[in-house]
Every structure is written in C-alpha cells, then in structure tokens.
Image 1 (cartoon, rainbow, N blue to C red):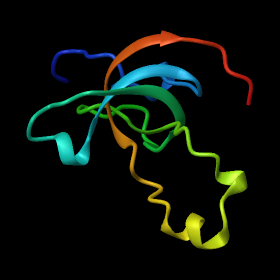
Image 2 (cartoon, rainbow, N blue to C red):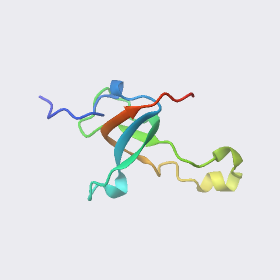
Image 3 (tube, one colour):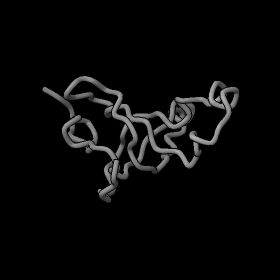
Image 4 (cartoon, helix red, strand yellow):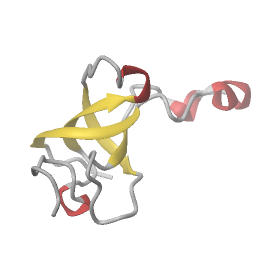
Length: 93
C-alpha cells in the first residue's frame, strides 16, 4: 500500500514546460518550495513516493557562454523533487 497521493509522484503526470513546485536539496530541512517550468525529468521509475526528481529551466543563456563559463555552470542548481503541479503552459521545444 502506498501512502497518500500527491501530485508529482507519477512520472506520467509530468512533461516539459509544466509549472511545478519543487524542494531543492539545500531546502529539504525547511521545506521551502521553488517554482519553475520542467526542463528535464530525471526520475526513470514510473512512481516515486517522495515525488519525481526534475530539473527546472533557468534564465541562463548557455549558447552565449564561453567554455570556461559552461564548465563552472552548476547543472544541478535547480534540481529537486516535485511537491505540486501548478499548471501547464505549452512550450515549444
């Protein structure tokens, strides 16, 4: 028996461009939420009890960055587990 259902526990509910609230690793103790649009779904399993792990889109323009800047870019800065699904706004990819 799985615990109480919460949006974001099933990978099938998530898609590119969906607006979600996540808890970042550094905010797990406080439970502070970060809102953003999904860039990547990192959880491979169909279900995760604490919420699927996703990477949110950033405002950084990586195309104009130098090689050194790209190497310093923390690719995991906006990675966390989905706590709630807010809305879907179609986004061209």
